[in-house]
Length: 450
Image (cartoon, rainbow, N blue to C red; front, side, top):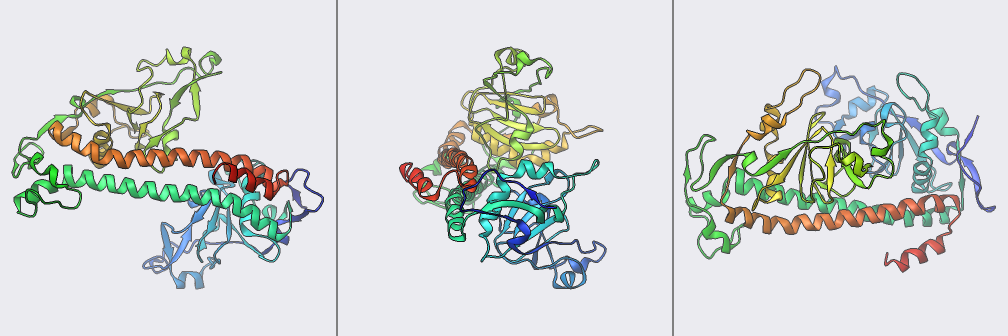
């Protein structure tokens, strides 16, 4: 039995089943964990369903060996294979293989016949039909979407050249979003490395001590004009050696620490028509960079009145304090928070970027203060007493000036990516259904400078 997941399509489009446009519809396998030779020094990327995030897959967490492929149900899949998650919470999630890879048995692999369909067009059809796709999953304990069902799915297809043109339009937007993500992650790595060099390894101080940094000279990450800000010796402290003139302070001396709560969900007046951003750790879980621009839910003025910490201003540093501990972001909009957060409101003169990078670098110390039988949680009272090696304000300001440029570029790219994603989401259903034709979509994007 075939399942049709399409609306009315143009007369010149043909409705076909997934199985009819694929060379193979198959799945992978999991080599036995009892045999370490299946995994040790493996060279074949091995995809798991949690790695399907509706985009290209360039690399995987685990790899398997040639022997694993030869002796298990895992098989090599060609580049441009479309993967669909079949089990559990990830049902319906998608991925595209950038190069030949393998996958586990929870992934359905669609090896598209390029003479019959464009693989990216198939990907976008499945993406558009996600909610319907998930509704076809069965099972009480765990949702299960079978390969037979996936093979039977029917979609409308224009000619292959038009499929490629549609996929190119949508793919160009996705590629720009991905490029922004990579650039932002690179900038984030630079900022974290800068913090580590200055405030964990004390590299500027050590460079002066060793004679590697002299007045009037620059070093990587250390412009010449910063030379006089740093001391040239380390002194003992309760946290070990720290730069002379720096202090060990409790984090509460650098930031006001507050928590949040959840207005009663059975009171519609707290939620319906809400205009205030209300954050849960879930809002941070999908962020690739620590910038919060929006939230899944909003609360009303009445709902906000139920949260003692009120509306936290833009620039507040958010740290998830349980299940799990460690999601981090700077709120780029005013927010209210639920009980799963510790919020750091910078005190006068303190850089929120310093607080953000400190919380990232101090993750193990923060975790060591957590407790709980059901799940680990760090309380606000425990958090407030965590020690920080605090530099003079002149050095903190210098760090803020250098890292702020990187951070603002990340924010700019995140905002652009949100705009591009909204545009893609608006075009996707119209293009894959034929409601909007390619020439009109191209003109639409041209008018917007894309």
